[in-house]
Image (cartoon, rainbow, N blue to C red):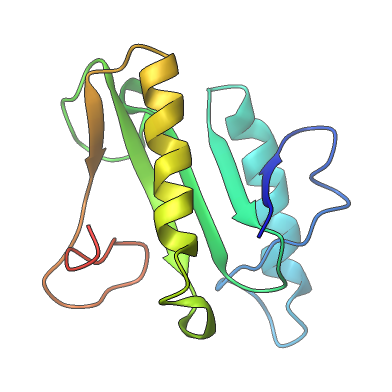
Length: 129
């Protein structure tokens, strides 16, 4: 399965799922694409599987994260989502490996992420990690 990196050049033509959408799914998707485009300038990376579903990882240098963490020199995983029908196929591991590779290439100290014992939106599953 191909992994696609979104950027300013391809974001309009690529499929992006968003849980923050209206009944037709357009409002949240358009808002998400606009938000991503602005965040690319801050170093945000958005990688997705080449599927029509929620199968993606987005991460950013921790100094630019939108959460109250102190993690200078780390990469922060902002959102990591693999929808149910794609679980167990190794796609999540492949996306996480992309993040690790990018962090190493940028000489980061490691990764940081916020998770929860209970399933909550936008928090990574600690069982997977």
